[in-house]
Image (cartoon, rainbow, N blue to C red; front, side, top):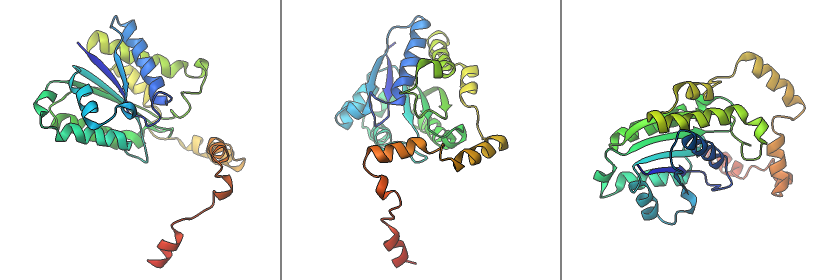
Length: 229
């Protein structure tokens, strides 16, 4: 069986999605499987190349980040390419699963996209084999292994289960989805940390790195909103 791990992150190889794919690949190897083909959607030039990569595989695992509560543009375009293909008969019976992750701590943010993909899977005639949702993923690509030990073990378990049983490990999927919603205690702690500017430290760092710090309070669309009120 030819297996394809497809990276749907616009960051390509330097992404949190690629880190997750590495962990899945390690699990597949641990389960006795051959090294899967790994492709970055952002590097596949043209819709035809993306479609052929999918059609030439027996099983595809798509890994992508949540972008503004939805799919990244390259993933949406890719899926539309599959849906519009003249040779959709080639899709029938192909095994398909996915991982959606986000910087939000709670997995609930990604559930609507997951439901959409499951329905699309059925409409395209694909065989749905599982899904995993993970919150708090921003930074995986920069974290030392000691900080990702648990999440790495769960994604490795999913890869191993996929190779041995043909499905995502249910216990690992359940652990990855925690927390689905933030508890009251966490929200109180978050409000306290916000007083010192700690929750948005990374965002501030990016603003300064990209020379946008002095323009952080800009409201480029304010004039249009005011004109139409």
